[in-house]
Length: 540
Length: 93
Image (cartoon, rainbow over all chains, first blue to last red):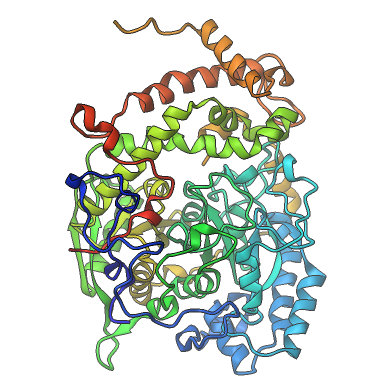
């Protein structure tokens, strides 16, 4: 590949394709049907089996990871497994042991598949080698369908639901050799931090396991805590309004929310169908790339995935590049990092960490940091218009709203708001989305290639990719930030993160083990309960 | 002349009626402002208060917005799009 994918995609407008725009709004580039015209070279694309060669997916383990199997990243474990120096059974067993020891405190999982995971690991011994995910223990957010395994989305609505098939993302990860350790806690129907359907807080931040008031991020809370607490090597979540990036930032992880359509939503309990995004919560950029490489691509069951640019080699993109044969890191692709107004404001530890983050990036060859201005009407288009998502959550659940409002527990209010919004306001919101995207592409991305974010919501609204990564600590609690990119720019985002992580060690920091006295934390959390009003305020 | 803004009582009637028209009965919720102790669902008075606020703020502000275009051409601007990132791709020109 000669460049990141975002420079090889012809810009064209759906409006032109539908022949509804006047001559004054002509678009540059070809108008193709049905797929985006792709003008660049195509790198290796991961197959369904995950068997395509990804030599960059293997990393020789650090000594501390050799001493504790739960410390291994995917890339490190893959190196050992490929070399025949680690059996998947041992890796799974190490994580199951840790779950048994500590999940009473963390409460990351609401279902642990102990026997099934061990059996899956044994079965891998008999088959062919699948690639870097071969034998890797994974945490799966409980809104992903898992065949024959309860999938509750932490909601009364799905309390007894046992899907007959795997979500496409789960099927692809397991086909690539991944092992499902269990289903993880989440905000009810993916709305808030993880709680029971009636609002009682469950999962804690792995960095402060004795203090449930520390925000662990939501709604993919359980997956984040499982990966941060080393109960799983990696995991997946979903994002509608920050549900991958927020818990990743809160728990020192690298989370990747891909472009809408890059990964299939088939078999995932919907929250907001035009904004739900599946993606990984991982230890570092390389692991996030390995995960998304397996998950991504066209799916016959999800039209949103069809007709898009091919999935590039994300694993290579997430591999640091060094000048010559030396140790000096350079960016894989020349990239301008845009800094939006307010990003560096104040004297807080977060502001200081952000400054240091940008300083590090600015020192990397091929990277420039530039101040950018926000498009017109940014506040209203990304603020009040966020509410336009609400009818999309209400509509598929109307039968349940009719049946019993209490099925929605603490999360009910936003479903009723959605049922109240008129169709004309909803349509206006869809217009506003295109206006926002056009302004982001024309105005914001004319100034930069990647932009820092102070909120995940704007790029969630328009379906652009975001990558969350750790940039420091304050009082023992992680500080993270978010980078946003153009459509299909996952490779560029990963390349920036990989270069930064080659120069920093935040992503290698791990929380200390919690005290074994899980009962104490359980008592504390039993007193922490979100009210319906708080849930409405925090709802994604 | 702008219409007189609806009162709380008028909005309550509208909200209950709109939801009832599609089969949703707020009467299933406990009366008052307290959350249901068993399920965490909000009380009727609390949820009505929240929904009134939603109608007055969100719906009004969204409805007031128009895409940037000269008068009658507004209908030809910014076609409603569910998935703009998919439908509109980009290349630096």
